[in-house]
Length: 180
Image (cartoon, rainbow, N blue to C red; front, side):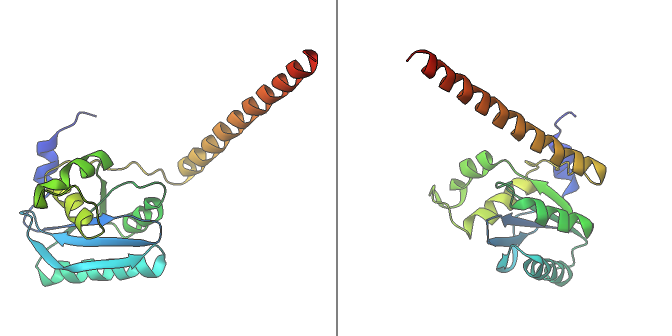
C-alpha cells in the first residue's frame, strides 16, 4: 500500500479526539488532544487488565462527550507484546487504533522542552502529536483462524530454531569425542 500522509492527516478532523497512550508492562499512561494539539482533560494512568481498560475507555468517552467530539483515535507505541490485548479491546469496541514508530517517538520527544528525557507523562503527548501529524500506521490484527495461524507459525519457527540448536550441539559433542 502506498504511504500517503495527507490522507492520514485528513482523517483527523475537528470532531476527532486523539489519545496518545504510553504502553507499559503493568501501568499505561494516556493524554487526550484535539486536531490542533490542545490538551483535554488530565493525564490518566490505568492498569494493563480489563478493569484498567474499562477505566480508560470510560475516561476517553467522557472526554469526548465533554468536548463535543464524535470520533476517537487511539495512538500507541507497539512496545513488546503488551499492546496486543489493549488494541484488541479497543477494536472490539469499534474504536480506531493506530501505531507510531518507537524510533519517531524517541526522535520527536525533544520538540516540546528541548530535553531528550523520557517519562510517562511526556510520551503520550509525543505519540498523540505524531498521530495528529499523520505519522502512524494502522495495525493489521488478524482475527479468527488467521490469528490462530499466526500463533502456530510463531511456535513452528521457535521449534525449528530449537531443533537446529540441538542438532548443532550434538554435532559439537560428537566432534569433541572424535578428537579425543
